[in-house]
Length: 506
Ligand SMILES: *Cc1c(COP(=O)(O)O)cnc(C)c1O
Image (cartoon, rainbow, N blue to C red):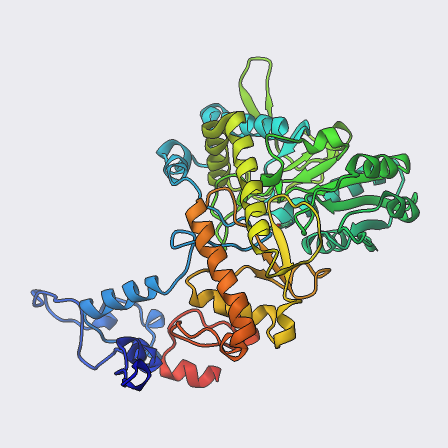
């Protein structure tokens, strides 16, 4: 008898697959508490709660034992995949291990309990954090003035574009257009349009880089700014950035750099030195705050002197007595973009991260991020086609070009990656690389973990050739198979629903 003939009994997992059994544990009369007998007169709930606050439409609440509740939530927690479970190779997202000690530092009482309405003289410690973080980010980017208010990368883009618009408007020089390369992140055109500009695209060369001659052709006195992502979304450094900046400046425009990929540059090269006028950083990608899950982030922006008057208010300034204060007296400011000083806890984590690593450590983080991406590129480029040839920095973009010969698409490969125990890479982004498979390992993954991932990707490439149907029907090892991804994104059901609610929603 061969192994194939053995009838494998349904594993426990098959039982758990039954959704009704997972979620419908309720049985009338079960409970997880024991209350002592009433030793006061029972006057009825109406005598305790005003009748207008009483609801009579609550039904179908689960009745379960404590044991079942604990098992239910413990089981759900193990179904989630996160950076604490394994490699999270999403490109353009920088899903890295973030030192847990910075969580403790952000939770120190003096930081997390300091009320944002405390007067300045009682907030010197918190203001010191802000002031030192601004200085550190200036040092890292080469841009002398920072605003820490924006709550996300895209929010920083919008803030900087508002400052650019205010700066041009001040001299009566209203401009209508923003140039954006096709290799930029999708938030860049969105921010420019929210700011009221028309967006004009600039095409990348066959190497996936900006062509200065093309920027020159598109540049005019109607262009307020060029927004570029550097390294761009192909993981490539814009080698002609200095020339590009000169061209834009010559016609009175500003250069905005999306710095979400700063973990490819920090400690080595400074955008300010390249001629960039303003940029944002994603503290929740590069500087310690965990990214993902929709938690708070921070997208501080750095600007040159010319744009400083337009930064959001208040700004942290040091008075003649040496004390720090929040300065609201900024007549040209675009105003507030966020309550108080921004997401303070995220700012504390960033400063802790920067001070822990120091200049040498930041450089090493960058070098390791770039080395890891190039290691993956080197070990996979014989089985997956590169979107663009040439060097990359912190991330590498392959495509499904070779696997398509067997009818397998990048989305199928993504599902199969899950069977191997990893979160899938970013798929179908950037748009200029059809069938994109974009991988960013980050600096925090070990050689062993990268090898496991690479071996899995190589095994999948082989499966695409030899058993394409198996890849196309993946995942096979998860509790659920393929979802209607559009419905899951557009109409997510994020909590338990009573049978009545479910009928109403269906
Ligand atoms: C993540 C990212 C953004 C947007 O940042 P959010 O904080 O998600 O708004 C912008 N540009 C690039 C290159 C990014 O990777």
